[in-house]
Every structure is written in C-alpha cells, then in structure tokens.
Image (tube, rainbow, N blue to C red; front, top):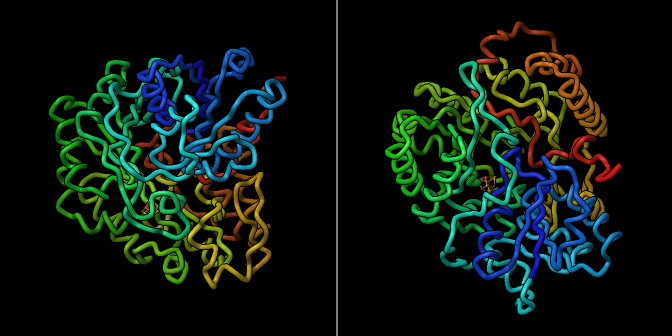
Length: 448
Ligand code: SF4
C-alpha cells in the first residue's frame, strides 16, 4: 500500500510523530512518503500518489493545521481513506475516517492493511520496532529549529526516552490518553535514533518526553549513555517543578553531562489556579526551582498558562513581574504570555465545578470546548496580547522588546532589561508553542 504520512507541527523539530510510524509501515512492506507541512510547500502530487493518508496530530496547533490539510485532500481525493493519530486524534473524528490515540503505531499499520480493531485509545505496549524512526524520509535537520547558544547556532536532534505521563494535571491532554501511565522507550532504541541525527550533524539534543523525570532512573541511564558516546553534545529536557525539586541531587550530574536548560510548566502564580489544575506545585516552588537549577548553571525556560476562566489582571501582571524579578526575560518565549486554556474532548477539567459556570459548547474547528472568563476584559486582553506578540515577532523584535510591549499593554511600568544577558540565555529558534493558536503564516492557504 502507498501511504502518505503528514506532519503539521512538532514544535520546530524534525517530526518524530511521522518518522516512527513510517519505519513501522516500511517494516510491514508498505511504501511510505512523508510530508512536513511546517517546512515544506504542499505538494498535491503526493495526494494523487497515496492509497492511504494519515495525519499526525500530537498537539493543538497541529490539529488546527491538519483540518486545513484534510479539507484540501477531501476536495482532491474524496475517495482517499484518511486517519488521524496522536494525542489529539480523537478530536478529529468529524473529519477523518479513522482516529487513533496513544501507542497506535501497530494499529495504524493494521488500519492501512484493513484489519484494525476500531478502538481509539491504545495504551498497551506496541512491541519492539525493527528499525529506528525513518528520518531519511524527512527534510534534513537544517530546516528545523536550531539551538542558539554562546553566539553559535547548532543543529538539534529530538529523541524521546518515554511517552505518556504518570501525572494527571487537569488541563493537560496527556492524561486523557495515557491515564497516568508511561511507556519507556528502550535505551538501545533511544541511542539508535540519536546516532542517526548526530550523523546528520546534530550537536544538541531535545528530549521530547512529556516529563523526562517520570522515570528518573531511565532518564539518568539515557543521559549517561549519551554523554559517554558523545561527550560534546548538549541537551535540554522538559521537567515539571515538582520533579525539579524532588531530584536536587540529579542536576549536578545533568549539568556535567551537558544539560543547558530545562523547559518547565510554571503555568500560573496563583495557588488557587494551580490547585484547580492539579499541578503539584505552588507559586513559591516556582522561584525555588529557578534558583536550584541556576545553582548548577542550568537555565529554566518556563511555559505559562496566563489565561484561564479565573484570570485577573493582577495575575497576568504577577507573571510579568516574576519574570523580571528572577531575571527570566530572555528565558520566556513571548508566545507564553498569550496562552489560553484549552479544553479538548475528554479534558479532566470539563466536570470541574469551578469550570462549569464558564463552559460553552464544543467547537470542532478549534478542537476545544469554548469558555469565557469570569472577568470579560481578560478575554479581550488575551486577544490583544496574542495579536501583539504575533505582529512583533513577525516584525523581528527581540524577546526583551516584545516583553516591554506586553508590560505596557497590561499597564505595568517599564523596567530596564539587560539585552546582552537575555540574548545569552540558551534557546531554540522556534518561537511558537504546542498549545498556541496557529499564526496567520501557519494557516496560510496550502496552494495559492
Ligand atoms: S502537564 Fe506535564 S506533568 Fe502534568 S500531566 Fe501533562 S505532561 Fe504530565
């Protein structure tokens, strides 16, 4: 069978979400081509070639873009069977013939071959894959986000040491699918995928695990094995505040092994909001985590969820002031100040008593239930800040310059920011985020 796998957005990384299933489909004897909508012009010839098409939807932004892709495909090939798979797979049931979520690679092969079991969510282990992800089917690494550090830009590999999460933060799409479980990727498989990206020129590694320390011993083994083989590689990983503080002994080890920064979901500085989200940390813990990591020379790159139904103007201002107080202006991608709570199908917040008064109908185009803020001016502020950030990034403003404009927009006095210091913080060149609405450019028409 000729199978076209389409990736729409994977945070600026070469998309593992299609490279993994591509290897599995090839091993089963199928002919596979991949298209990455994030970096390649749309090619209708691929649609004409395919006998099956599967779209990877691992996050909100990708889901929005995938709908546009599927609209185009349906116009050209109404007969072509289409599947959607990934964390947001279930949200695509109204436009796809088959939706899958979780550990679905084997089931995707079964769908292509016409003997799938019809279940949406798959949590069981999928077994060993004969080959590492088929990265040779993807655009080269130099088309993707780079690490900017010490006045250099470096190619970035992305690998995952685990999938799923043992936590159940209520706003997160991961527990909806994985229900508090993780699936560990075998050390050999992690290293095999890493090797092919190092051979392609990668000098930095992003661990794409939802939380790298869900299996702390496994993470340690992976980091040590990687460092033994490639002592010059640097890396970043995503770790929740609770885990940063629970493993104080680990950060010196990780720093020695090349850890430059840790992405961490700070979300809010309002303890009542953090409790509603079941985040497992308090506002006070956020500052402690920044300090702990910096003691080891590791920077934190916080992600935020400033706009929820309960947001007040003071809470938005508190985030901006915290960023200034902890010298984090260069650590926060400006899109983070715009993020609005998502309520996808199955969200653990849908029946929360503090959400129900603000909950609206499901909006399939946005793959989220609608909601309004208790203070309607916060909905307007979010739209204003989101437009501002998109415009200023498009215009090429620096991160401190955009931060200054956001302070102004929320009525905070200007503060001095050390531009050199902000520029020195290691970061990836990708400016957007998985929970953000797509930009105008990301949703540009597929063909002129
Ligand atoms: S937000 Fe992070 S820690 Fe919480 S459930 Fe999601 S992946 Fe796990």
